[in-house]
Image (cartoon, rainbow, N blue to C red; front, side):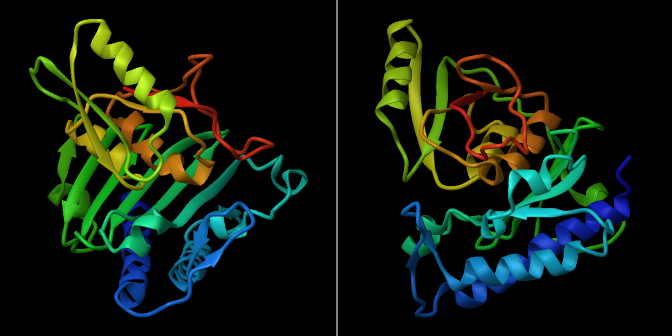
Length: 264
C-alpha cells in the first residue's frame, strides 16, 4: 500500500523538477546530441539531479533508473524488485520547439510492473497521478501540496463517451508509416477516425482523461517514456500491451527499448 504522504511527496518532486525546467525554458541553452541522435539539454540534467536527490529519502535504498542514468548495466539492476523509473524531461524535442508539450515522468516499479505513476506538465501546471493497486487516477492543476491532495483532485476514468468517431492519438514528432497503416486499417473497417497528435507522455494523459480512445505506437520508445503513463492508464482500466504478442508491457528488461505497443 502506498501512503498518501508518499503520493503527495512524489507529486511535489515532479512539480519541483518542472519549475527547474521552466527556469531554463525561455533562456538560451546548448542542445547536445546523444549517441542515439536524440537531443539533451541542461534542463534534462538539472531535473534529473533534483529528482534523484529528492526521491532518495522517500523510500531509502530504492534504486533509480533515469534516461540520464541509462548506463546502469543490466547486471547491476537485474535483481531490482522495486525501483524508480524516471524521465526528467520527456519530450525534449517539444521543449526545444517551445510548444509546451513536454512532461516530467516519475514511476515506481515493483516486480517489473508500474504501481505508481506521476506526470507533471510544467507549462500548464497540470499534474496526473495514478495508483494501479487502487485502480484510481487523478488530475489536478495548480497543486497545493497537502495530505488532501487527492481529495481535491479530479478522478479520471478513461471514458471517451458516446461517439461514432474513433480518436486515435499519436506522436507529434515520431509519426510512422506503420501508424499511418494502422489508422487506414481502422478506416477500412468502416469506422470514422480522427487523429490527434501531441508530444511526450501527454498521450497517456489524454487517454486517461477520455480525450482519445486508442494510442498505437510502432516507432521506438524507451521504458522511461512510457512507465508513468502506463501506471496512470492502467489505473483507469486501460490496457497497455505489446502490439504483436498482446501481452502486458513489462519494465527493467535487459534491453530498455519497448516493443511496439497499443493502449486502449
